[in-house]
Image (tube, rainbow, N blue to C red; front, side):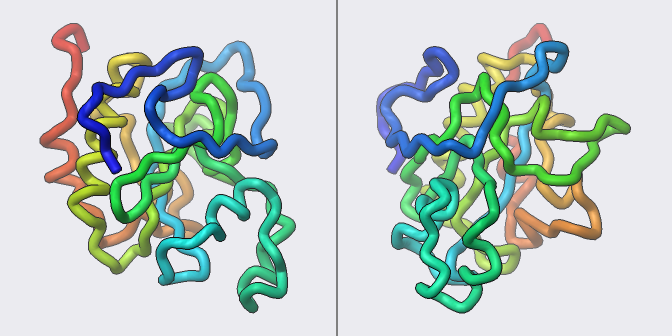
Length: 191
């Protein structure tokens, strides 16, 4: 759940949130700046919320026989910087200064390999299930901290996975309230 304490980023990590570090990341290229925020959704099994499966997936510990869909994905090496659960709990897997493996084959404004210069946030959900008020509160809080720390991320550089991988990805989906979310993001007056 979102804490009343103001979040801060120290050495690429949010303080006051749960960490579930994983090995599915690497170094960002030295010549790329963090300048894009990508919003995703995930649920494992699809359409089911809660439980350990997302954490197991990012840690490479998903058991293939726990659910039929897991047999298809358990060997994938993917991660995200953050996950926001339905109750607003924020979990960080990869430090922001590192490259998480969330975007896959992707392009933004002619620039490919979005993982190189982006931060990925997963919302526990589906394209067609309304996100919770707690998730929006947590997402707004963390986004405001991220855009303050990484000022190259402007309002036009906060996108959905569908925007950087059109035809391949659809998340965060039609259920995501982009106007309501964007209205609550605070940007420095110098931007």
